[in-house]
Length: 425
View 1 (cartoon, rainbow, N blue to C red):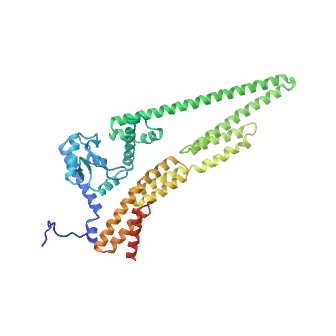
View 2: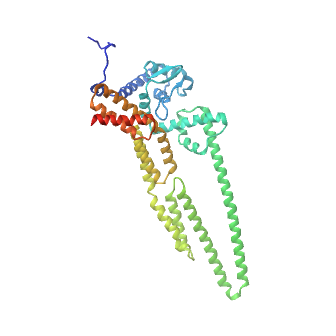
View 3: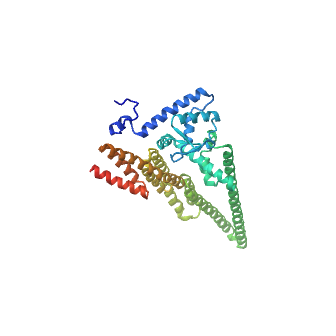
């Protein structure tokens, strides 16, 4: 009779067994949580001044921003919060605990499921910090070869997380200095551009003032030449014309500024509305009619006021999409659809497009993970021939098929869906 330690007895996975102990992924995830808590306790006992999340930070280094395993050699592990002795202690305990494996001087997580579990526990801020640090490290490598700093778009993205990157020491001192130089370069270019625009506007303003002065002098010469009996009337007419020109110039300037605010990304419809209200007031108070009492300002104001609520709607859609994305691979397509709804509002296109691009890059990984889960259930179903296993396999394959993909893997998924439906029906 076989004992509990008899390794020669064949092991068979059944649906009741899986339901009792949980899926392989669940067992591995629970094992990981227990082990890293124990290792953190040992680290605290062995060393002083150790970060409370040291083991979590080390494990995060072995997972990409997309949630896949990331093999690293010892010299590639950049964890500035730990001494080398503390780092080697953690690596040794994680290897003995079968969480990490060492092959050819390269460490990596022992199972894909561990990477997915670690990734799933990351907050939105941690994911953003990881993506920002990845961008910085890649651009730093390029800089060492080409001496080219980051561009304005890259600086805008990294600047959102620069405080966290510096505080948590996620990037090296050289990389941080590289980011600072890039930010200073972008600021310098933007200031230079603003100065150029201001200079052009100043020159145009001087030209306009000179033209107005010349027009005023011409009118005055005409008034002086007229008969004395019409002098007072002509002077009044000149003053009315000057007032009209001033009002008209102010009116057109406010309209142009409001249009700029509405065309920004994201647009400022509230600010545009205030400018258009001022333009309407000038048109109505002018001694002469301007634009039919400010017709264009009134129409643009109606448009701006109607689009003010778009900001709340856009923010709600982006938050909803992020929640769906964080629920797991099977919700990626639903999240992508909501991101596209936010983009269709034409409110903050840069933010919506960035979220769509980042999620689209993750779709192949989601497809592969769902396909593998389907294969696990399908293989188990063929072993035990139980209906629930085919139901689970069919659900995973159906979720994978919803993700755009092509090639042999997609044909495999579609074929497995047909087989499951044949068996279940």
